[in-house]
Amino acid sequence: MTQHAAAGQRTVNPVAMDPPEVRAYVKFCDVVITASTLLTDFNTGAFTAQLDPARTVAIRHHNVSIAGKVYANVEIGDVLTALAVGISRVGNFSTPKVESLGALWEVDPIQ
Image 1: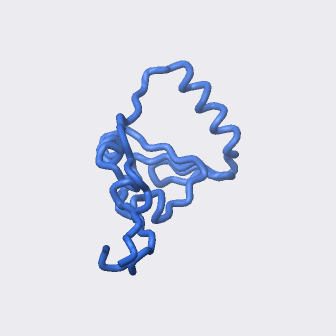
Image 2: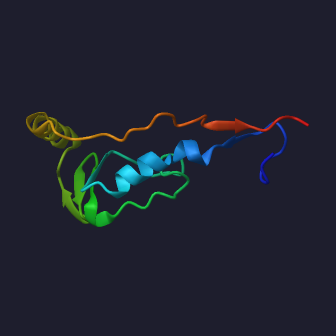
């Protein structure tokens, strides 16, 4: 049983939320692109992810932030369409190799 959970409670498995393969992949990417992403404890590995603002492009509904500079009046649909066209032209990018994220939830047995 974990220190913070009573018997029978579900607790989050931090390794499943933040597998080392994904962490290393993101850390060494030239740029990280997020689209309409609200950073929460769930999608940041319990806030352990440390995205470098200088290497982050954040696409939001009505603006885009590139390396910390915000460009207003830019619509998400327009950006994603242009990005899809650009990616199809380049076509040479990799994805992280993750065999298993493990169980997201750990259930402590009832004693």
